[in-house]
Image (tube, rainbow, N blue to C red):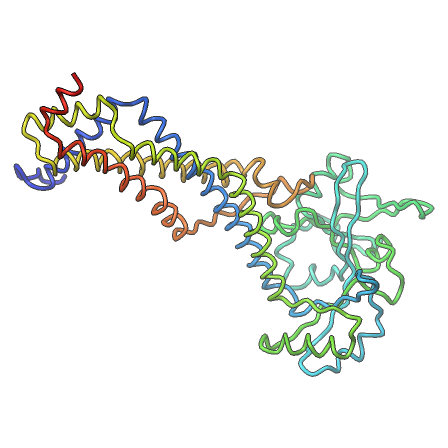
Length: 409
């Protein structure tokens, strides 16, 4: 238990002033409630945008480290087309390249659910036996079964939930109009929930099965994933590939990372700009506060001066009133934003940032809080309000109390 404060100490005076300031706020509860509500709204809006932008960007940047150093695509007529395996052998002779992995990927639209799935082809044994085994929840009696080895797949949580609603939780029937019959794919595993931001709409198929579903001819691939062991050589190797093969396009890991930052920064800027009316209302609030005190507030200052309070004490009361009001609104706005984004999963706002696909809305946002940006919001809201709002109190405090009371009478 803390010892009692000495009589007349500075701390005790401040405690008494703060107590008086709180009672003053309660005496004008209607006006102060509106001011605090405005603070809560503007801080809530800005903090929500910062939270969701930071969460999505951080998650994607972390996973981007697993991307290949260079992605090679073939461009024809300004559009990406399949790349032939004839490029593989000569490209491996380019100095700096460690290995090249040909990939098949694309999209599959399921009419029954009005949803697009991302199809990716690879050798599933790399997931069954390799270091990535832990990111997949394997279904019993499905791995290495030998049955339909080319027609197996691993799906994300969002895909699995949708397929369960169609009673296809164990086997999914792919069908294209040009096929004579549907092709069944056994679901051998589900990606762990920790990967749901990347895998929620993903179907990873055995390579040959993906080739059939996406109608990629034999000897052709969607793109090449080029591994460059020395990160300092990535841009140089990409330049060599473009010089040898002008018809090919190279996309480096750093370019993808910059794109992630740009996309979410742009979207957060658009959302913030569309909510400028909230900022305008906040500026009007500050202007109204700076224009002067209400008659009852002026009368209160005059009475305090008349009973012996000096100017410093009056200003201290008004200062603490403004700090309690603005800081309380700031903290409530941040807390509400945190609950809205990370507990309620940002209903509505998340769709603006990631799209309206039916597969996406189920994944959880990972909490990422940038305290530097929160401090910036604090300085841009609380400090201006406290600084400007003290001016009318100072004008009233330096005025003769008899004149204030007589003019109000």
